[in-house]
Length: 264
Image 1: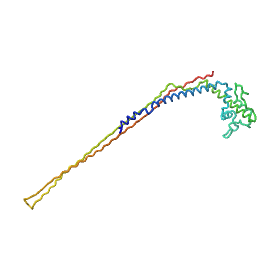
Image 2: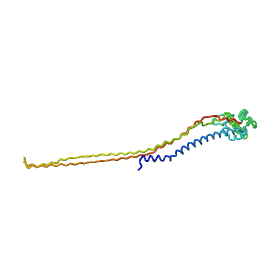
Image 3: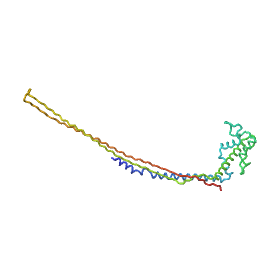
Image 4: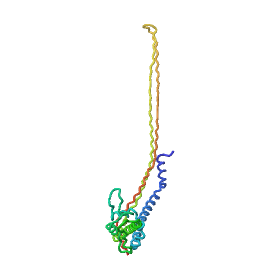
């Protein structure tokens, strides 16, 4: 039967089965991969931005006008021509098929839709006074999408002037630690007890012939007994175990800077 110490040594001999080198390798490789992936995402963002602003305004509008959502268009129209009676249940804007636009409404709407500097029909002004037909409404929606695309282009140009914020790793620490503890113990206890008892008895008898007889007969005897009892109890206890703690820590120190993105 193996003792507690033997079991602890057996645990220690299997330390390589924990896979600590593999754990450390994966921690290092995963950290490296994460840094590379983050850097690639930043570079991809820079490339997409440069590609966007390298286009002409007209080309950018034509490429992105279909990506403008209806909520953005309604916000633009609502800001330019709000509903006649604003309320919780009213339309977001007066601009809708069948609505009657005044000269002031058409002027405000055309000012909001105007795009200068590119070859567009009437500088993107699509609103006219009078009852708004379905085709006229569709032209206004298309002009609003073009205006919003031009706004995004202007924002991208401003970003290139400021540069792009990026994260750069200055230095870092990758730490792995393994605490291995194997223990074993044995306990042996023996208790003994003894009990003894000695007994001594005297038995005597006497016999006389008559009252005041000169003849007297007497006898006496003794007996001796001895008892010895011994008991013993034995207790034996063994324990063994193993305790393993694997610890990994990654500390990376970042700083931020601006990458110039001036359009060539």
